[in-house]
Length: 310
Length: 311
Image (cartoon, rainbow over all chains, first blue to last red; front, side, top):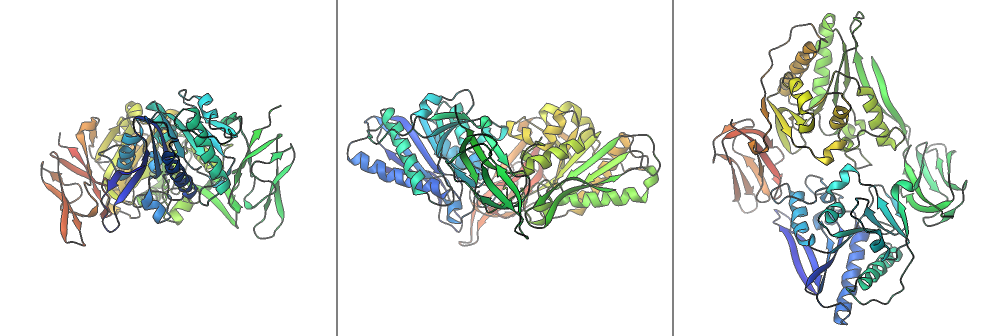
């Protein structure tokens, strides 16, 4: 294992800003794994730290294939994580909206450029990422539906779901999208949580990545293969939206199978305690995403259901 | 007349409302021509607030000269304005990346869609921004090259110093201006001043420009001031971006708007701890400093200024 500084900026009153990478093996740039890019992505950092530890052990045991290089970057934004701020410290920009970056541009464009120059050469790219809305997910692998994706490859993680995301204009500056454009097969790995550690889904993601490395001949791993992944398009998921704002009281859990008509949550008046709305499942399905805050606004997609296959 | 364009109940005893003030002629002229002035999409940009106030005040003084409709939307993002937040608080989303919105979508998408509906059909929309809290800008209009043909003639009448035609970008397709321009409602993006502040002279300049536009469109018949002839820049090479080579404290050596010679000192990036000068920022060409850093702390890469080549 080699620990390298991938990108560095001189600080004024803080220690220098450093993006650190952990390299395993030499030769073909086989796979790059990226962790937290935003200051609140603690689970993503945790997942990568587990992988660094695991890969270090596998390297010592001779289980990594010679001639294949693995790079893990646990954190692209230590400055923001250390002050628990989601976006960039000074100007509040999001590094994951700056790819492929620009070496003469603004700070976060330079960080994106400095990192992307190193990681764009890899054959596979895996990013632990988070959703813009607070909530809990079924663990899954996500790909941009850009026409360049290979869903069969994504199944090799053995995660319960592979989600294809329709590309929106603002996606074109994310790492995942730019990896694909620069011919890296890119996957986003979603575990259950973001701001708190969830060991169970972190272990599942770790197993998924090691299984993928094994199937690609990059490492020897003999855990269980996981699931036969179901491929779902994000546009085919059924959203359940609130009609009213209030306290959000869920009646189901993520991953639960629900029948049509089942009560998913109740919205409660914040002053008078009355149930002002009951949200029910419009289809037979599985709870894929659930809102994670105690309050909700009106018109908010608080659930996403995967329609159960016949 | 003040009306509500869109509203949604918030969780605890509060209604979120986006309001507008419609000013119409005292006597029905039959004209349905309408100019719309929009501001406050970014909650920390306040320069447009004064423009709204002053525009209404001056129209009311000479209401007899009004021949069309003036719609004024001072607060597209009321929660952001209240909390000094650029985006929509709680959602951490830039409201100007949500357009054209979705009437069936979530709260923010719904608000965006209602705003779009309400503005559609205006003769011209002015979307007034105030840079951000880090940079000060001279009054300027930014035009996407895709819509250049329709917008330049209008921009010339708006009394700004500079019209900047910039290249197309996929990301910008979700802005209010792009969305409205795409459906045939001409929309000018004004940038002036700095976030969290009011620059009265720029506000007055802009109000003069709006009256001139109104006159050209047949919405105003009163006297208007002569407008400035803006510099129009289409070539990306005419604009130099001055990014900090190192972090530190930027202390300017020249005024905003100064005409500079190549090599002239623009400012220093200093280290107050050591007393040293970390870097000197110099003009890379002859030009006018149309953007300058307002917030002194910079990281490596932070923009400290922009220079428009002397043509």
